[in-house]
Length: 238
Image (cartoon, rainbow, N blue to C red; front, side, top):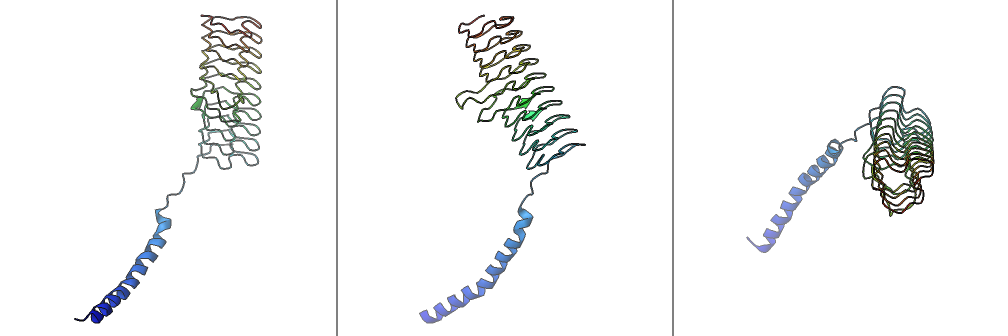
C-alpha cells in the first residue's frame, strides 16, 4: 500500500467518523436540560408573603402569617416561623433562621446574618438589623432584642456582636451598636441599656435606663442594676 493510498483511507476514515461524532454532540446538547437540576422552591404557609415584592427571590421556607409587607423577606434565605417578619422590608436579605413571633417591625432583621433568632425576638423598628457585613457568631435567644433599634449594629467590619441570651436587650435602643462577646440571660433591660457596650455581660446584669451604656469592662452576674449605672465603665466588675 502506497503512502497516497494510506492517506486516502485515513481521510475517508475521518469523514466516516464525523457524522457519528456530530450525532453524539446533538444528543448531548439535547440531553443537557434533563441533567440540570431545578432549584428547590421554598414552601410558603397560609396568609404569608403578602405585599409588593414580598418573598421575591426568597429561598427560605415561610410558615403561616409571615413575611407580610412590601419587600418583606425579599431575598431572604433563612427559614421563617409563624407570625414573623411582618412589616415593610422585614427580614430583607436576612440569612438567619427566624423563630415564631419574631422580626416584626419596619426593617426588622434587615440583612441580619447569623445562625438563628429565637421566638418572640427582634420586634421593633430596625431591631436586629445589620446593614453592613456584621455577622452574629452566636444565636439571639428567645424574647430578646425587642424595642425600636434594639440590637441594631452598623458600625463597621471590625466588630461582630456575640450571642444574646434569653430575655435580654429589652427596650428601645437597648444593645444598640453592642459588640460584646456575649450577653447573658435577663440582661441589658431598659431604654438604652448596653448601648455601645463592648464588654461581656453576665446573667441578670445591666438593668435600668442607659445601664452599661458605653461600657467596655466585663460585667459579672447580677451587677450594674439601676438607671445609668456602670455608664462609661472601663473596669471589670466580677
